[in-house]
Image (cartoon, rainbow, N blue to C red; front, side):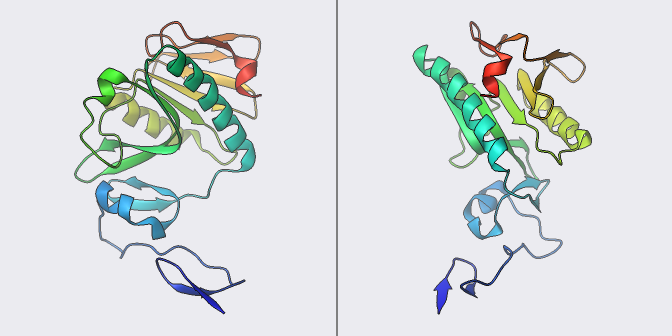
Length: 200
């Protein structure tokens, strides 16, 4: 018995890997959006990079943070909360599309968005939840890209150490532990939450 997928026919019970674009062929963000058969990953200067789906512990924390920020944003009618690896362009021609764990974008910035696929205007706040195999060199590369497009604040959440690094720039960073209160700063004025609550 076989089942039809968007990219191939496979036998039930057989393992498979998503297809990849032809080598040396750069793709655009719009093409990435239409190529669901590629599986989960990011686009880096036109080159698709496969990434394994995050584990359930990562998802629990991501969902918790999205709910906490989302409730505040909705209550005060500030804009929109994105979660679940929503994409944002950090470079064009060739395109780079990064997946954000959680993000906040104001009504004012959302009104400037022209793309129907991934954000082409920077959100004010981005939250990155570290996975066990994340390397700081890659995290730093993302931080550089985020600040280059106008992101105001990035939270890097470390579940293993139960702490949050708050970046206002590449060189201005604060570390918060579960004994501390985290605020939204210029990105989310008036917001505050005990760091411990982010981890559930």
